[in-house]
Image 1 (spheres, rainbow, N blue to C red):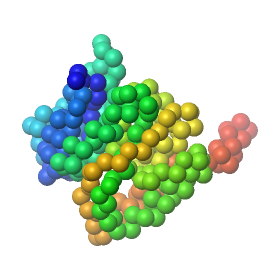
Image 2: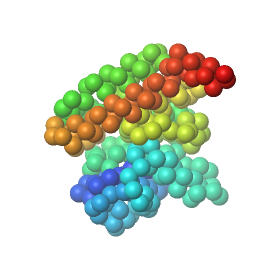
Image 3: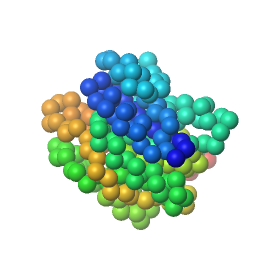
Image 4: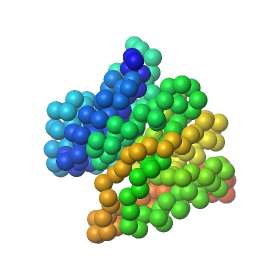
Amino acid sequence: MSGDTAVVIPAVNEADRIEATVKAAAALPGVDLVVVVDDGSTDQTGRVARAAGARVVRHSRNRGKAAAMETGAEAVRLLDEDTAPRHLLFLDADLGETAQAAAPLIAPVREGTADMTIAVFTTRVKLGGHGLVVRLSKEGIRRATGFDPAQPLNGQRCLTRAAFEAARPLAHGFGVETALTIDLLRQGYRVLEVEVDMAHRATGTDWRAQLHRARQLRDVARALAVREPVVVHNLDKLRHR
């Protein structure tokens, strides 16, 4: 199968897992390009990723997940200038060897039956304190679109280039998945959830993990706030005064 899909992997301090993730992603059917966006890592994430065969783009400081996704997609676009645009498969850096199970995410996009696929992990890892953010995102998406996602925050997604461009500019930080789903559904793009046998590293309960979840909650809340009809209507009235 000729290459029609590029994998984009945002990564921060994932030197211990990025090699396995990159190699598994590169072996997926139809993937001929893996781009790792080193989002201000302080370890050897970029060096390890490059040694594993990825193209690496580095942010000099941490700019957040959405910015890393945009940077990776732009790198792919530049490489696609003289060819048909590749589909974009976004994978998290900590998947390790389980990234090899991402092929079912690509198939519906390649076949033209979906514009974006979202992974539903069949292997669930207990995420301490994560449920509040999931519920917020899930309810916000359902309220905005009628779609009831199983795993609304799952970052493993495959999109056509057209769908990705339609969703830009991406919502800030960890609000990106929630906003992607809402914005594409509202524009009539077809979104499909796909079960895959993939798994993240378990999330801890120490202060760093709690801070991470607080940032997620903040970013998801912001993404939803600007997409709520009442909020948007009031903002428009203020702008036109």
